[in-house]
Amino acid sequence: MNTSRYQYVCAEAKAGRDTFIRHTESGEEGRVSKCVTANDHVIVETPQGETRCWDYNACEEVIDPRSRPMV
Image (cartoon, rainbow, N blue to C red; front, side):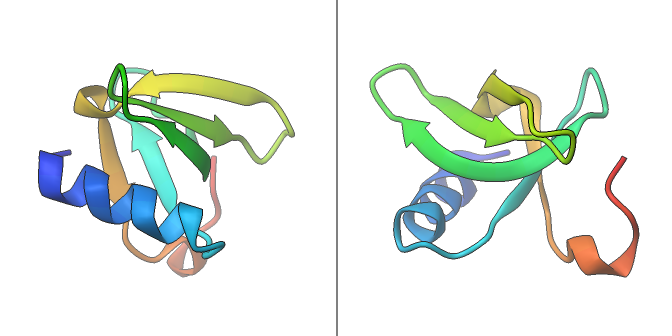
């Protein structure tokens, strides 16, 4: 994900809107709960209720998660 999309995703999450990303290496997806801009990380909640912390450079935005089930 590029910097401008990271900033957008963070702004959406901060505003309380659901935003979803995928970790490109693991294929895991989740809802962004917050961003840690000091170190460019994203805190994500997976569909299984687990919390992950990913570097935004290793992620991509999921544009419409309703179009398919999250894995």
